[in-house]
Image (cartoon, rainbow, N blue to C red; front, side):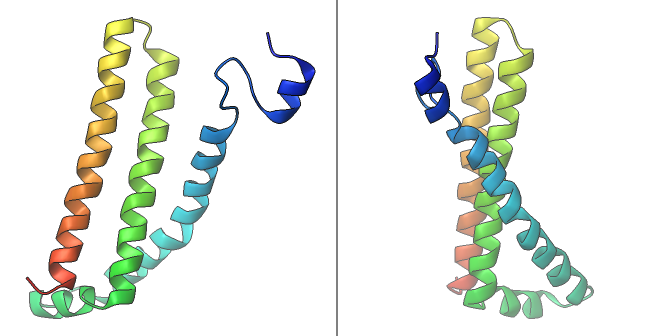
Length: 124
């Protein structure tokens, strides 16, 4: 049972309080301008050749913004899916295996996307 002091500090039985809540909100706020940038970038380059897109993506500012979007979205996705799994799956084995799969999937998406952006940016 949480004491009033622990409730004020945001610490419950799990002893890490509202950290996930705030991380979810932070990534959501970060995703808004990053997705707006992505939409603008895609609209601006509709019909561009492969070489032109490669040239635009090799710009360090564009690469950094794309990497920020990828990682913010992957973290946001993992937190959201984890909340859904914890709320709606009641079988312990199914819940644990789903949480592991979601974590690996989010990491795989982040790593593969980062590798692709770095490969384009560094000119390989």
